[in-house]
Amino acid sequence: GNVDTFSGGGGLVSTLADYFRFVEMIRLGGALEGHRLLSPRTVAFMRRNHLAGDIASMGPSSFAEMPMDGVGFGLGGFVVLDPGRMRAPGSVGDYSWGGMASTIFWTDPIEQLSVIFFTQLIPSSTYANRPELKALVHAALVD
Image 1 (cartoon, rainbow, N blue to C red):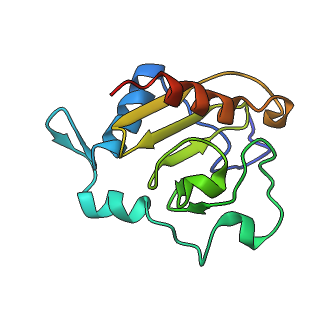
Image 2 (cartoon, rainbow, N blue to C red; image 1 turned 180 degrees about the horizontal axis):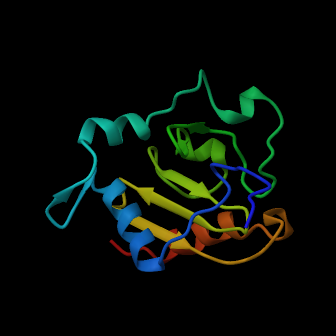
């Protein structure tokens, strides 16, 4: 049929397994299972903050369920700059992105962790599942 709305960031089609493989590839610096998709320099550039400060310093957040204090923006995702200011567990360098229906992925380079979470809760501000999920995952980590 005819496309009425063009939205480059308006959705992604994948399987859970393939999406997790993609997130894990990002965490591992661009390669997975002996296959390189991105150079380590490209992934480092993606995961670097490209703002002058954090998102909160730029104005009111449109992400009601996730505080943006201490969170910058890389290429295609959020980058944690200061977990203490973010008011949620995490590590410096966490890289994440969420979808409209309350989905989220994040990678934690310090904890060597990749997480994907898929739900269909719209609007995502209905319930703050992202910070709660991060708290639950970090509480379950064992050294």
